[in-house]
Image (cartoon, helix red, strand yellow):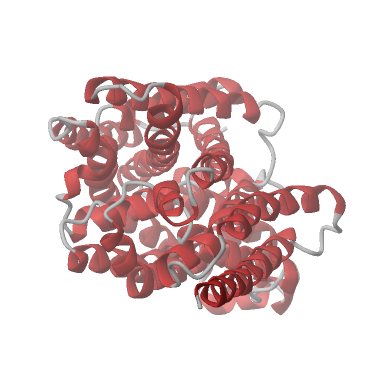
Length: 469
């Protein structure tokens, strides 16, 4: 067991104090539930990018990427590459319609176009998909903390959940965004430095090429075209369908700021994955029998300068905690705005909504902790890809229809898509062969129903026109 030195501890403490001060400042920005949910629509491009990357660049894109690279090589890049492509599309094509919608949540956008029933249905499946990614962050936290300290995995999971609750419960988007900016500066220094150290310590990229077979380690489809293709596809759709990332765009004070924040994210996210891949491959070269989930934290402890290593360990901890917190914030916003306010307590005032928002964060994290039991050794990115795919299958088709072809799709077909598509993904996980990702089935069914809804809407309008003659 590698031991933390006093240099590691000093680096960790200084970094955490810095992040805590930023978080404390962010808490002073929250006066209303609108501030908590969308930053009062006052966010500049830095806060928009910080909120997006503060959630996307977490345990999955660092510890999880190094773990998958340890096992399969460059197919691990799909998480950050797909996330970058998703942010690019979000900035170029979706930010305008989203910003003009003047809504706070994805279900609100859907409900305006397809009726009230779409709001609770989409809320349930989107929240379920987001919930799966919180589990991935807790798994990453377990790998990190058990590498740093001699502790039971479930104790590490409990500590992670407590930290996630504290991280966002006082700051909402302001907390996620401001801390996201500070975290990303540190994370870039940390992860890119780790990648450089891994390559130089190995003796150059040529040593990696010599040590590993070209396939699967240097292929983006090392686990198979269907599996890895679906992984990248799920990230793109997930980014374009997830409350947290859309919420960041909606929080921008102008369309220009929202678009710029998304494009900054698209440019900055993919390189982090490359650095994590080389760390994972380096640990495979030198420690082939180790627990793959511990590849990144153990690399930091053994191969990085302890002063820098302390900063890196603290930054990884904040990255994991920040992502889990940001995801729980997305669930909280959907529940509070779309379910509690509409179906449970229609007369709730602003203070009540803020209290409920914070309570839902704690409850969602506690439930994720329960689901982590028995899955402590599972692949981190497995949960992340599954999460993004489920969100995409639920929302992407209907959201595209609501934003780009308003009034062209008959309501019941869009609502059917929100139910049948995610259910087909969940059932496909149980009954389809592992070599075929059910995301393709779910998206295929979704777009088939949307197309049928277009024809049904045209037929309805044709009949109405004939009746009026």
